[in-house]
Image 1 (spheres, rainbow over the protein chains, first blue to last red):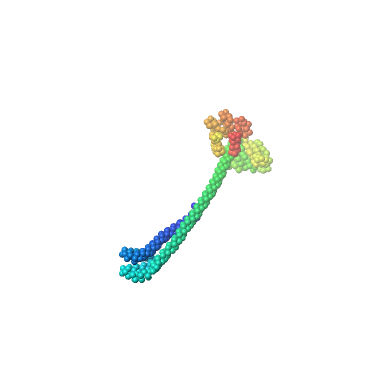
Image 2 (cartoon, rainbow over the protein chains, first blue to last red):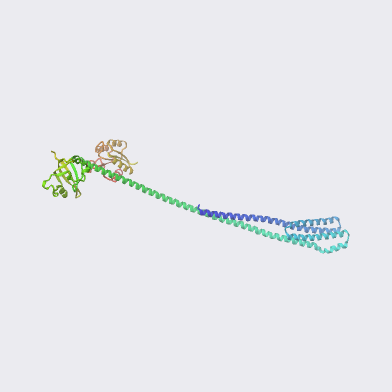
Length: 380
Length: 121
């Protein structure tokens, strides 16, 4: 896989991991908030319940007071005390619950003041009843005509409860919004991650396609190279075969030439007469074995020497030194044969032998290029 | 199966060169320098073609060719001779026993042409 693709994929997966982590953190925080909110709601409901119970205890105390005023029964008086005790208990619980909420706590302090005033009023009424002081009882009851104190307590209690309910409603709205936000965050994160995963898949697919194309190109290049190598190898094999054939042909030609030369020499050497090949200037260019045998001279001392060194024609004394009268030169110049001319052959010791000389012009086409001289020994 | 050629020549270099060339051209070649050995070879592994010289170590080539033709009348014979044998004489005298006459100075390609002509008509 190409380096830049790996880097891109790594970056994509890092982003996915970051988004996942962010969503998880946000979700955990929202769960914590929900838990805290639930605690607060329970607490607020407890405060509301305590306020309701407090007012119920006040009402119960008021009802017991009125019954006691009518009956003067000790049990009704006990009921008043019980109600007062319940009021005190609910006040203590409510104050404890609202210790961290100054506003609600202050409201319960106010309710406590009202409850103390009511308890004082009740004690005064009870005392007047116990003393059968009807005037005092009427006076006290006149101050509470219409139940104004109870209504005030009720109003304060309802105010506290409505405040708490309003806070509950606000909290509920906040919880709803928080839940919405959490949903949005989670789904956005999921959607983003899906998109990023799709992008990663696209990158991988793109890279795989690129690798496939590269592999195909490489295979094609390899096949092309292989074909070229095969072609080149075939050319080299053919060239090598051609060279081998040419080499064999050259060797064959050399062998044939050697064969020809050897047999030509064999033919010449098989002749008993002396055979000399001359150039046009009468220099010896080749001799047969009989010449070497009779003169005693090796080939190296005969070749390129003038014929006159070993052969002299028997010519009249007055024309011996005239080149114009040299019959060999004239015959070669005119392309004529000379037959059976008397001559002498001189060997390496200076011994002279009488011979008959015959000359045949050596023709290459129409041109005389030399001559063949044969010497026949004259038997004594 | 490649065609079998028998080369009979008393000159070892000639025999070797011609064998190498014909083997390179795809033929199976056996070479000998004597008439006696040639007759044995013909008996054991009959050739499809015979290339022979006239000068042998132990026999006259003409006599040997006549003996070979008695044994293998359908096998063509190429006569490959040197300078001591006049081609005109060879053509007249050996016409009935020899399918082709070539001088030893002939190029190898010409020899091959005749071999192919006689083996693959």
